[in-house]
Amino acid sequence: MQLKNEKTNLLLINPEEMNQVDKIAMQYLPVLTLMENAGLAVARAIMQFYKPCKILVLCGPGNNGGDGYVVAHILANEGWPVKVASLKPPEKGTDAYKAFVQWNGDKTDFNIQSVRDADLVVDAVFGAGLSRDIDDHISSVLKAADHLVAIDMPSGVDGKTGIIRGYAPHAELTVTFCRAKAGHYLLPGREYIGKLVIANIGIPENILSELSINTWLNEPGLWELPIADVEDYKYHRGIVNVVGGGTVTGAARLSALAASSCGAGLVHIFAFGSRDLYLLTSPCFMVDEGDFTDTLQDKRRKVWVCGPGLTEDEVKISLINLIKTNKTIVADASALTKENFDLLKQCAVITPHIGEFKRIFGDFKDCRIEAVKKAASILNTVVILKGPDTLIASPDGRVAVNCHANARLATAGSGDVLTGVIATLLACGMEVWEASCAAVWIHGEAAFLHNNSWPNAMDLIHNLGKARDNGRYHVEK
Ligand SMILES: NC(=O)C1=CN([C@@H]2O[C@H](COP(=O)(O)OP(=O)(O)OC[C@H]3O[C@@H](n4cnc5c(N)ncnc54)[C@H](O)[C@@H]3O)[C@@H](O)[C@H]2O)[C@H](O)CC1
Ligand SMILES: [K+]
Image (cartoon, rainbow, N blue to C red):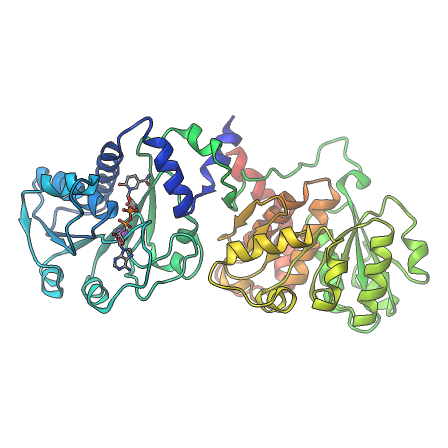
């Protein structure tokens, strides 16, 4: 029960989906009630986080502005000094207009001076309805605010993509409704949100399950990590196999070490050469060489990492044979080329960074979520688009946004470590997208565990066991 709640709380909605939700919600509750609930939630958050001070509410012409008029009303009733500046009044007959006419307190001009005269600005200019770039006048007014609370979104942050449309103010606090939006977590938008409060405004939960919303925040609860139990044996914990290059060996060794440290029961490396180097890396590794096709006959050796440190030829030979023998393949690094496009279709997971992604799929427009979803659907493969806000897409349409990472993960070999973790979770039987999401989270956690200093790939590896445990404790708490 706890798990389910946790999972539905991780749902991320985009503005179009929110629109659909609103339309259905109207059958249960009038929009004006939702708006009043939204305004109340924002006013409450302001009263929780700020002492009474001079408030200026900047209102746009849509429902975001409507929420703003409600906030003004409530704070004024509480005795706070409040002024409202309207960019443009809402159209007559709309719900926002009803909220607008109910405001009979102080009004002021929508200009820089009004902002300077206030202690705290409430940004109710644009929310989910942002449809074009913010113009110079609006941006100059927003820019003048020293302290700003945003309703739903800081105006200018695109709720679907996190892209900044012309300009956006940096909010100290953003209050959104029902669920967070992808733009709250995707970069660069995430940097403009400040503290995020998600308020329940009375939208019935069953509406969310009726719509096929399938974008998630990547946190424990979205997936469940298997635990080791007393009856476990090494084959149950999973066998990870890594294809090791004959000349460049570091990357494959990092993948194998990562697998070993985060719980794989057994780690094999197939070496195209340099067998001794692989053997000396860890006494825990089983190292094979010789006929690759013979090695592949062992049906227990199902999950394979292919790409890190391999030459073009090594990639080709290994991918073709792994596919022929129906292995579960995690493809990374040298395997990720346009030439291998058809081979990648037979892989379980691919892990491109943005450069590799563009190399394989070409450039894309604004929305990374759409781009990665499309890529996963074309390849019929889970695609992990690595970056500061890694996206994990499944061919069935599920996408997770990972914020559980820091800049310190950007270090040589970090990707190879991730590949090893993914393979480990696949080898112990997790479903492919869930294993990928969990691995990305564990990888981020390993960097967080290296507090106050800069981890290299080996440091990350040392932290993986604890990081994996933390991925469970979050759920069990
Ligand atoms: N279920 C909920 O979450 C509820 C949310 N509410 C709030 O409603 C807004 C969305 O309202 P909407 O009217 O659809 O859009 P906006 O108010 O954001 O803006 C639309 C308005 O603005 C014009 N516009 C858009 N971009 C620009 C621009 N760059 N420059 C100038 N003008 C622009 C556009 O033409 C429209 O006129 C949501 O964010 C919540 O705050 C509801 O209160 C209740 C339920
Ligand atoms: K806003």
